[in-house]
Image 1 (cartoon, rainbow over the protein chains, first blue to last red):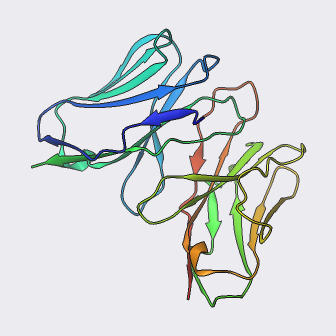
Image 2 (cartoon, each protein chain N blue to C red; image 1 turned 90 degrees about the vertical axis):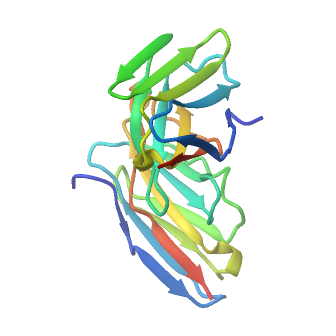
Amino acid sequence: QKEVEQNSGPLSVPEGAIASLNCTYSDRGSQSFFWYRQYSGKSPELIMSIYSNGDKEDGRFTAQLNKASQYVSLLIRDSQPSDSATYLCAPNTGGFKTIFGAGTRLFVKA
Amino acid sequence: GAGVSQSPSNKVTEKGKDVELRCDPISGHTALYWYRQRLGQGLEFLIYFQGNSAPDKSGLPSDRFSAERTGESVSTLTIQRTQQEDSAVYLCASSLGPGQNSPLHFGNGTRLTVT
């Protein structure tokens, strides 16, 4: 069973809209998560981390963690064409082996 | 160095030849990971090193693939008798050790093309 599941998309939203990216996970022991963004032809880069239940906001980005439902999400407000990328969620394994989901491709239409 | 360094950035090789890819992690990062990413696909886990522990090789696709790491420093991924299906970007990442909240920091990858 995969550690995380993501809808591979593509998810297409108009510029200025809210993009909602979702991730479910199977390991109830997972306590915190990271969101990475990968532009085409580039390496993944960390954009958000969330260590506790609830919401965490950073600029236009909000990460949400619901441990009871084993669900993590990333909201991007006022989406811009520059947000077009693949978004990957991964559990914080505390320095242990990390398996990534397929990622969700996001297209923001100008 | 400031980040994870991988070399070469690009490698073109003929089918059947061996290749060696290098990764220099961030200083102080005890965990090191190798992933393969085929065009348009996700990150495929290959191997994981943690300090001086035995590596987790569960993702290596065949015995043509091997990797080594010297202590907590440089790692090399070797692919013997390369095949066309080995063509991909090979990404290396490093992170802090167990018990610490540490995301993975990725290198720029090595793009391998097998002709």
